[in-house]
Length: 84
Image 1 (tube, rainbow, N blue to C red):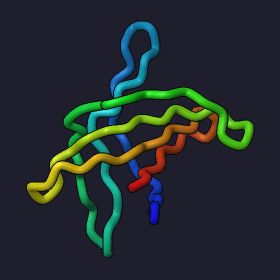
Image 2: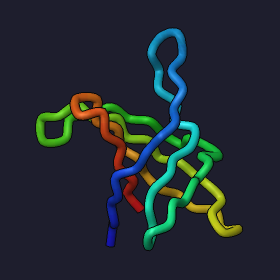
Image 3: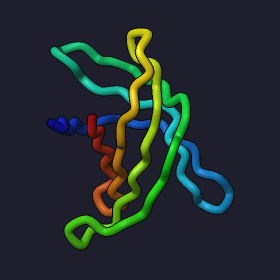
């Protein structure tokens, strides 16, 4: 089962406009959690439901466990969503 959460992201943009998410935070049971992105395995641009979307497959070490997850960026709404 995939779960999605709206997240806050810190990202870098290079001189050509390429996006690189660095870390994000989200609320979990009333507490803010911060996750540093260790590696971006894949980045893909596609249209979902007609909306342009960037999807990043990333890895992070969370509670001493390496996790793989997707974060998606919708440039029309400027929102990031975590899928795990």
